Length: 281
Image: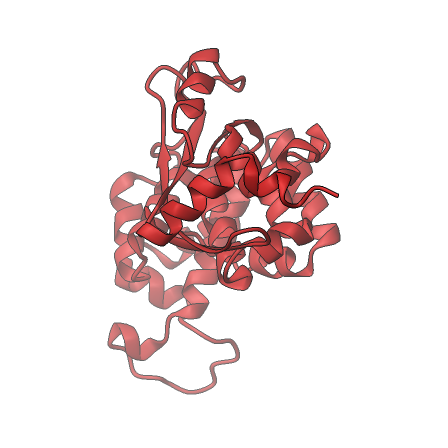
């Protein structure tokens, strides 16, 4: 583990420990608790490890926890599936970039997105830089074509572009979801220069990002419905899908498909030229 991964593991464990009450794990509340949550010695006892060893782990010391111990800690801290997976990745049990990871968009993947017609689609790298999109996505979010290339990052536009804030149907919830999924993905790579730069810049310009980042919350991506409020066609209810191309590891394709007939008709209108000609001066 790198020093950054050890520090993130330590802070993540501490944050989950403080969120868990003694009653939740069958312990008596006890007195003289100066801080919320479980004590380190209680976590160590329940997980079957020594208090000293667990303290070292929360101090970010250079130790090599086994998969079995990480699983025991996950059970003790009652981690969700996403949190358990994050814990394993931070501790070196999987989660690095796949071999042969690419950052540039192959031409055939651009053709695939273009073939999706009125379904908006875009491609992101491992650090969520947007490296390609189709016409339907540009009609959904025109700013993708005009934002400076250095700022063409999904997390950056979600937290800094007012147009995206208006576009997302429930920005506080949606933006937090993006943040937790990003952290789950890049946790073992928090020392990468592009990730460090992105997080540092977002912390300096977005209090909402800073608060969410400090929580250490993580979550898995799930294909589900998303609501958008588009300035031209109004409310869109779209299903959000994420695909990893087998021949382009490190890239992800994000595709939105209509969740109902009304949204399908609106996407078709959005993809056509007439709706834009009507708005011309």
